[in-house]
Length: 557
Image 1: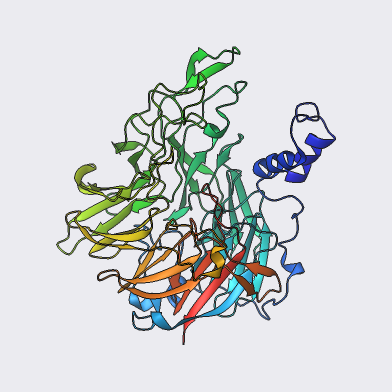
Image 2 (image 1 turned 135 degrees about the horizontal axis):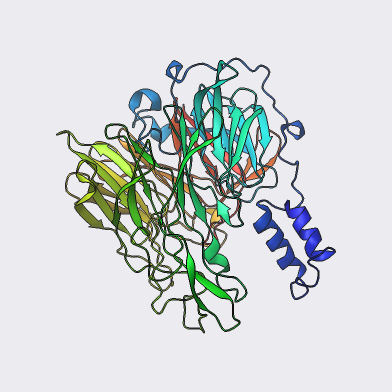
C-alpha cells in the first residue's frame, strides 16, 4: 500500500476506529513508515519534473572501459578500497577538492542509498523510492524509476542476458523486500521479485553479483512492534537468497536461524508468543571466490534464548546455500524493542535484555603481504573480530575500539555501518567521535584520531553532535569519514592527520533545479572514482540526525 492509501484508511477508511487515539501527526508517521516514503511525494522524483536532462544517452560500455565503484564495497571482498588507477586522485590532490555539482532529491529527508559509479554514470536510490542514473562528470540526469518503497541499498551494475541479447542491468532492493533489475542505460524494468511477502521485511543490504547470480540478504524490523501486546512476537528470521540474475528466479534461500519458530508462552492478553527469531542481514554479503563461499554478518536475536547464529559472522556455500560455519561475537543478545530501561516490561522481554550489538557492516576479506587471508568485521559495541577464512572461521584476533562509547544510552553503539581496508590496516568510524586504524596483521591499534564538531560550523544549529557513523572509504594514503555534524573528513592513512574537510550541512544550488540542503552523514559512505568523490548528505537514522536531500560530487582543481 502507498502511504496515501494507508493515511486514507486511518482517517476516513476501514481503520478509523483503530486509529481514533492517534493524532494526525501520528497517523502520518504510521502511513509514511509502512508506506516506505513521505506522504504526497508520489511523483515528485520523476525526471520529467526536473531540469538538466542529459542531451544524449550513449550505449553502455564494459566496466573495463573506465574506472568504477560498483556496489557497496567496490568489489566482492567489500574492502571499500579504491586503487590509485580508478581513484584518479592522489593524496596530494585531496586537499584541493572542490564541489563540482549537487543533485537535489525532491521531498527527501534522507540520502541513505549509496551511489555506484559505472561507465561514467552514477546510479543511486533515494528516500522516496526513486532510482536515478546521472552523468558522473556533470550531474545531468539520464532517467528515473519509481520503486515500491524506500531504497537504502547501493546498486550493482552487471551484464545479463535478455531475449538472447547481452545488456547491462542495475540491481537494487527496497524497503518492502523487492529486488529490481533495470536496464542500466534506459531505466526500464527488466524484472522485479519480492523475497519476503510479509510486513516489516526489508532489503537494506546491497545485492552482490557473481557469475550470473545475484546474492541478497534480508532484514526484518519485527522487534519494533514487539511491545504491542496484541502482536504475536516473534517469527521473523533473516535469510540469504541467491537469484538468477537474468530472470529473478530464486535458486536457493537459507535462513540465518535454521529452526522454524514455535509457540512458547502467552502474554497477559492471551496473545501467543513465538521463538526463535532475529539474526537479520543488514549489510552486503562478501564473496570468497577461492573457496566458493559467501560471508554475512547477522543482527541481534528478537527472542530468548538468543540463537547461536545471532550477532555472528556466517559462511554459506555459494552453490547450494548450505551453512558451513558461524562465529558468534556476542552471546545472549536477545533485545526486542521497548525492553530497555527501568519501566515495566512485557512477556516478550527477556529476563536480561541484550545490548543489541549487531554486525551492521559487511565482513571485509583481505589478503596480507605474506599471502595469509583475514576476514574482518566489527559489531556495534566496538569490538573488531578477525577470522581465518581458510580454517572455517577460527579466531585470529580481536581489537577493542569501545573506549568513549556513550554508556548513558541503553543501546551503546560505537561502530555502525562499516570499515574499509587497505593492505595494512582496517579503518573504522567511531560514534564516540573519531576514526581508528587497526593493523590487519595482529589487531593492534595503529592510530586513533578524535574528530569533534566545531562551533565554527554554522550547520551545527546549536546541535554540536559528536560522532562518525557513515561507512568509511579508503584510497592510497587517504581515508574518508563523515559525521553527524555533516562534515566530510579526509585523513592520512599514516597517523590520521587531517588533509581536508567539507561542511555538507548547508543549502546547495542543485543542477536539476531542486531545492537542496545537506545534513548528517550516515550509513552510505563516500565513493571515490575517476578523480571525484561522491557522497549523499542528510541522514536521520535512529540517532535523530539532521535531514537532508542532496548528492554531492567533488573534484580536484
